[in-house]
Amino acid sequence: MPLRTSAATNYHRPAHVGYGLSHVLPVITACLGAVGLAQRDAHVAPLVMVENPELHLHPAGQSAMGVFLARAAAAGAQVIIETHSDHILNGIRKAVKGVVGAPILTPEQVAIHFQLSDPKGCTPLHRLHRRQADKEVVRSGS
Image (cartoon, rainbow, N blue to C red; front, side):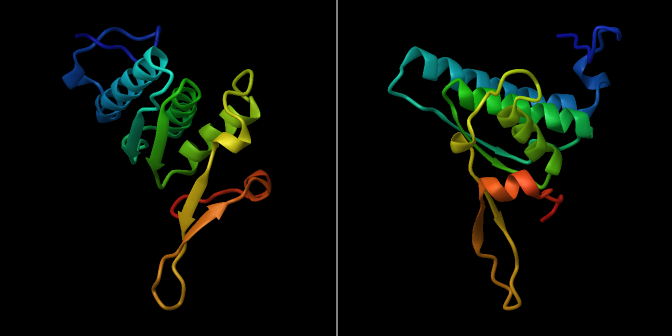
């Protein structure tokens, strides 16, 4: 199946495009399948868990992936993401704020949890509250 990355480029074989594109296709497929299942049965909320969706993507692609994952969640899938990318988080924030058009999710539909090491070496789980998310920039790796 030939692929192209934009309307301005030619079609290429999957082996000749960047690894990021081939890494993203299973994520997109899983999300679309979950959304289809959720829309077919209103009593089902399929779970999609994605580890490091930012792998091998440029920052703009990472942000677009965040928006895409927000769209999947808005369409009925439960989406859990493990990421080290502030660009993924910013894409989700854009989806909530409506930067890419109308808001896709409400702030109440998004929960961001993170871990910080304490002096004893423990890494308790913390939740980032909406006021913090609006005021602070989440740094990559934090």
